[in-house]
Each structure stands twice: as C-alpha cells, then as structure tokens.
Length: 329
Image (cartoon, rainbow, N blue to C red; front, side, top):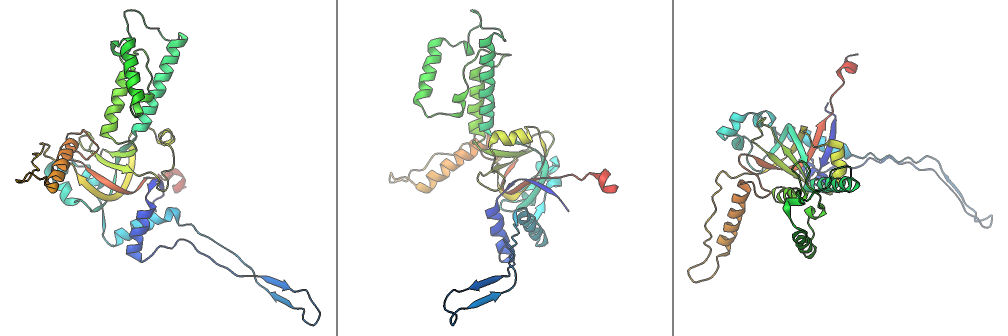
C-alpha cells in the first residue's frame, strides 16, 4: 500500500472519470434509526401518548483522499494508464523519438521523477523582499553606502529613474514593479532583478508549475501547470515554497499528455489573404498558432519545448517512505 502526500488533486476531473468507469462515485455513508416520544395536551378523552423507541445515529465518511487512489486503481485494472517513469529517464528513448510513440497526446500516464516547483509570483516576491532588505541595510549603514564613483542601478541618473517610475505608474502594475531600487550588491542590482521577472512572466505564466527533469542532464522538461482552486492547492505561493522549498525532489505526476514541443522552430509564412482581397480566417489563425508554436519551441513563451511535453494534471503527490527499522521490528 502506498501512502501519498498530495500536493494537488483535480477532484472534479477525478470524479468525472470515476463516473465513466464505475457509473458513479459514492460520497458518503449514512445509517439512521430514530427514537421519538410525543405527548399531546387536551381533554382526557382525546389525549394521546405516542412512543417510538430506537435510536438515531449518523455517520458520514468523506471519500476525500480515497477518490484519487480509487481512480488510479480503476485505470490500471482497465489498462488505461501507463507508468512511463523508466522510459522518460532514459535519454536514448528521447533521442530515438520513442517517447512520443509510448505516450502520444491524450494518453494517460504516471511519471515519478525529480522535479521542482516554480511560480513567477513567488520569485517576484522574493526579489522584492531582497531589494527591501538591501535598501534598508544600506540606509542603516550596515552595508557600504554608494560613493560618487559608484552610481545607482545600471548607472541611471535620478532623472532616468524618475522617468521609469512615472512610466510604471501610468502602466498596469506588473510583478516586477514591487522591486524597489537599491545600490548594486555583488553585481546584482534592482534592474537586473526586474529583468529576470520580466523573463519569468513570459517563460512561465504566473501560477504554480511543476517542472519534472527526468534526465539528469536537464535537457528535457516535462511541465504541468497546477490550476488554482482545486483540492489541496489552497495555500499561497509563499506558504507552498516555505513547505516544499525550491530544490528538486521526487514527485509523482498523474494526468494526460497535453502536447509535445515542436522540433521545427521556423516562423510560418503570414499569407492569409485571399485572391479577392478578403482575409482567410483559417489561414490567419493557423499562422498565428504557428508563430506561437515557434516561440514556444524557442523557449520564449509558456509552451512545451522540444523534446519535452506538457501534462494535464489529475494529481501530484509524494510517496511517504516507510520507516523500515520500525517496520521490521
């Protein structure tokens, strides 16, 4: 028996799939018996006395954590899911293109591999906290104050910084705007941190991502975006990272294969005009989708990158290891 520590469960999707397999999902158990006594007040001739003996007991069993293991067992019994953990850890399988044959888009898979969590919002908050502490320490004299030959961030003058601040105030607020100016420390300054967050916003759309790296070289990324509002994913980003950290650890991801990153990253031809001067809507949509596919293949936007793929998650969990010393005793 596997004891799981769930990070994420899409309970709606799990219930829907169980309903297809088993014709429904039991949510609670109820057992009831009743004890009732009733007296009516009135003339002796019409006075009534009723007594029903028994007892009432209500028991509700939440299926909670049992829902997903039920689905996992049902999928395995029907041979609808495949564990590809060993396959994706073999670099030769990726080089030969076998992975796509083993797990085509839409197939249900289980992958256990080293992976880490990433959230652009948490990174922006951490950088903002660092900038605040650095500015505070410099203001208190705990760190060297800037000298005349050591200007502020990226050598910007006060006027330039004021112009940038004014532009930010007029635009919609972004995550990087929370990073305040401070004087460079160890080659890191506020503009560098803001640039990192701008990149992160494009590479990983704000939200919690699970990035699995099954190949030790780090050349393959299996990505999964964990949708907020699902069971277990009810903590703020900073709470999740305080609990699980940023280091890689072993996670199990169960879900359906979404799409693979494109091998060809050439930009498409933007030829979507008909001969009569009208716009061909189908070719226009294909051209834009092709352009975004190329950007994703180049790593510029939040889409799978070759040779990796995306997974639509049903559940993410860690297996709780047994204490073999106690188990054997």
